[in-house]
Image: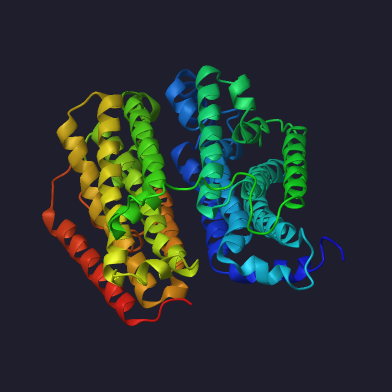
Length: 522
């Protein structure tokens, strides 16, 4: 029997399982890219304004580290500069989640053993997972290319292929890690860690050089995307780097897949102590999620420092651009530019924190569907008590992340700590609403629980794109973040904050009530 027998059937099954989540990932990423040209046209409508922007970015190492260098004054080149690295990050995250879900997750749950007992080749599941990631990235590349074709077909094709290339590099990397580790959670964490290191390498390289030529930039796939230079005399040969990396990593993954048994790994999980040290459901939840909390905490603190360091230079970057000032005012409130920038960046960190809370809450769903919750609940542990441990990590972790963000801003900016910390903590109420909705979906409609990712993605898109496109107030108010006071600099209003906290409490209570009454996955 061929080692690829049954690949087509498994691919169709994978695409069917991802028919809700992957389209959301692709749509959010594509909309983020396609909304940028019109926004940039409103901000920098003349060649002189765009030339001044390039001069300001080239002279500011912090802005280059955050976004990258600009290579041309066209709207297409500015679009590639503004969202290229972040679109690559989203494509990479989507791809690694797809591959790990259809490889190591399947083995960990025991479903892969049932599939392998049929007429299925040894490498069919891995091939189907990589093909599913390839389909998602191909659709993303097609949407980006078609949507930006009006700015120039050649540059649009380069940007679309570059974003998809980053996605496939991390898809094949996840395929290798899935063979090495015994845990899907560890596979996702390690691959995400490499993705974070790739962003740091690119940022460090771009901070040192303003033309993308640093060796550190070339060590990162995100740096390859940057040096592909869409809309700026494209370097098509850079695509060979993506192709070579994908081919080599896929070959390694296939070689490893053929040398191990189903469910096994080359790096087995280290056995625990002979005598257990976890004496409560809450302690178990913390043990399972502490790595994620540490990683998110470090990232938020570092990003807070970076954004804080940019604050003093924002006035020079915006200059006399009234349109840019208006966007900051819509995001950060009708106050001076520095406070408006701080408020807008704090709001962006709150939006990103919504991704953390959804992932942390849905750990309950993963524990249940994998069968690991069953032996815990078979003891003297009630469902609410079991869930409460994970929810404490999820909702308490949000407070920790925003506190660290505020401290990072204070370190980077050097301003007063109190107002910045207060602004960050106000965001917690809106983040808790998103987390509460995830709890409600899990408890009441467990099959729709992954849709919470779609909600978080939609809220992120509204907060990211809405102010730049001057979206109607009714659209912005769909997001709970649209009801928060604009701090620092604005007037504190406790009413909306208390309403959002109350709504979060109601959603969590409803979700826990549903969890108590429904059947658990068997």
